Picture 1 (cartoon, rainbow, N blue to C red):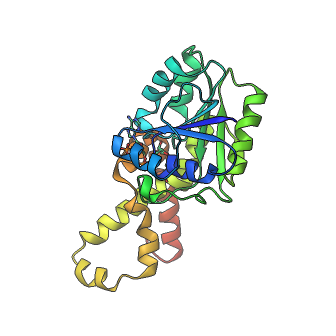
Picture 2: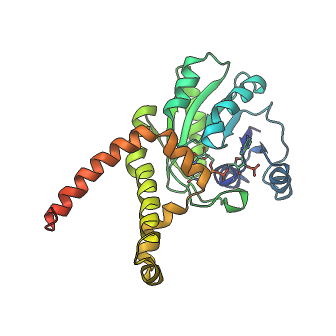
Length: 253
Ligand code: NAP
């Protein structure tokens, strides 16, 4: 039986475990907080905490801890284990892996699914149903490992898209990271506006939809906006130009 390990039992890590439950794998996992690990064991999501024998390891820690986690995992993982991550930014992680000759088979990953919630309790088995899941192979990635990982991702209900890490970072700036910034900014703008009291009392589903992303887990939002800052700023400048042109359509100067 293949052993699959998950490190970081939060929204994404927990959802991977829940999605793979009863699919014929031995699931193991670790996390920062012993209480989270205890809960995952009690809920039967993991059978143990040792990742040394794992065939596939999903690193699901916050973005800024991913490289440190890769370094740690490289010390103990089986030499033929497939190691992947789920971090929302790929360029700097793939540079690290490609520039350091670590004794690991690493394939970068980013599931295009999530919610504004965090932690194991927020995770659910169907999170990745119908989602795209980006994979960014490293220099040493072989096609057999890609196939194995793709099969597991398909079992989670997601479809693999192979991308260059830097093209990925530009694309997600456009459809995810800049919208996160705009949503935060819109909410802050309204909250600080002189008409905010009545406006917020009247705000209904449209405003809630436009500002849902502003409620993203604050650690994740900060990691994303600082980590992909150059692409977000470039996209934002283009967006501002577009906004001005659109405004002109309605008679604004
Ligand atoms: P999350 O719910 O906060 O989960 C991260 C978990 O990692 C925490 O629950 C924490 O668990 C654990 N953790 C923190 N530091 C750790 C460490 N040093 N060692 C081991 N475990 C540690 O966040 P998430 O949304 O799942 O995000 C995790 C990754 O998924 C990020 O890289 C993010 O970019 C990516 N991602 C997120 C989304 C999304 O929409 N949320 C979508 C796609 C990809 P305990 O403190 O409970 O142990």
